[in-house]
Amino acid sequence: MADKKQNRRNNRNNQDDDFNPKFRKIRKKVCTLCNDKNFELDYKNVDQLRKFINEKGKILPRRATGACAKHQREITTVVKRARHIAIIPYTQD
Image (cartoon, rainbow, N blue to C red; front, side, top):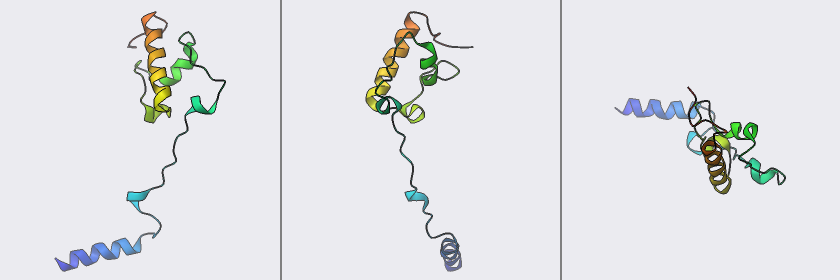
């Protein structure tokens, strides 16, 4: 039993000292809508909305779009408006 613990300690010491999987530096995504002040969401602009929906027609989450909470709510509203007036389909088969 003690040998197994010793082996684990040795394995940890042999690895790179800077690498710690618990505290990885993850680069924070910057909201594209906050960065570009001229960028406005519009339910009529389908090419713009395609960036925020996947191939099945689902709205992408914040972690995928990189949008802040405020703009993600706006994206959701705009996509739903476009779906309602049939500019974007609800689902794509």
